[in-house]
Image (cartoon, rainbow over all chains, first blue to last red; front, side, top):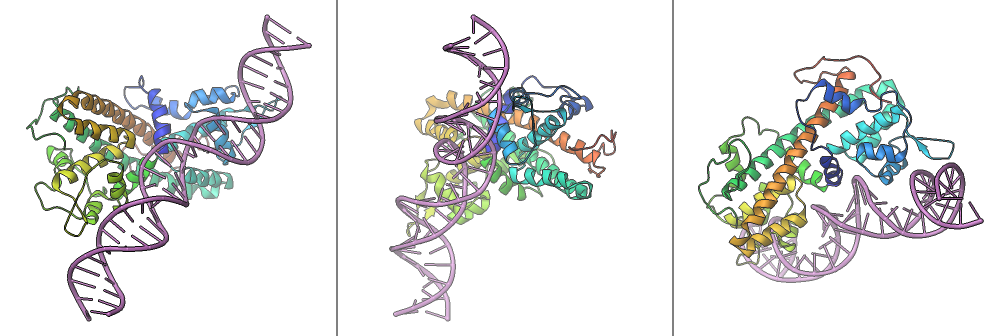
Length: 169
Length: 169
DNA sequence: GCTTGCGTTCGAGCGCGCTCAAACTCCTAG
DNA sequence: CTAGGAGTTTGAGCGCGCTCGAACGCAAGC
């Protein structure tokens, strides 16, 4: 999955984020750069864990419009950064570029598209939930196999159910 | 993510799977076709939610060896199916084909590669855990935006924290 | 005997999401 | 004055994981 790419990049930056899912965390997701100075492309790239190349690409395909400063360099204002944070979140959870393009098009069309946007979000929420299920199953399978190999999983139910039946083949 | 592809296929089949993560569930993951008759390619494809094309492709790249019956048709025995179930689980959780190829090569090399296999699994377990974190964040962001749009999320903390600050832009 | 269906092999093609190279502009520091 | 560094545009290229088409084989049913 190309999502995988994005994901793996984002994951490295995630290691220290732990603790409870709180409103505060959600705000970190949504309110980056709240009423702050415009940012350069590399600053935004660093913030989002992506390359300037990718940011230009997102602009090219119409996901964001970005202003220029006096030198012709891109200047990302707070709103644009917020949108990019949102888009990155959606990408990370597997929403296709195609769908994101559709979504921002709806946004540009105005308030009467809110219901359709809502539908997209609801559907995507379900997709994420299913992904969570799948991943949880994969995690269980992985830990199961780790257990059959006799490894310390570091998980709660560590040494449970090793009845030696040749892990692989 | 190409993983996305596989995932989305698998997800549709997942809708009815609910309830607690139990040993029973894990066994469903690992012990499909326990000591049963060999299966045809389409049977296995249906079981795994993938196409016969993809199964042939997996064989081509060396992930499995598959015997033939009297007609030259592929015949998947229980061990092979088990391996495919495992491989599919790993793919679904984002392990690269390259890594899976390496893994099965290690399996073929024998018992002395168990430590390296274990390392791979431990690392992959961590990857899955990070993905779960990421997805959880994305889910929160999605639900937050749904809330700002005034939609019923169907989630516990539905109408919490709508302070109207234009969802998008 | 001929069609239908399910399988085979082989190589090529494709969609996605980036990723990069080349040639260029502009500003700043030494 | 020159060199370095950060940015720009455009179009092309790439890696991944399938996915497909074409030509063929074999068996069962009408």
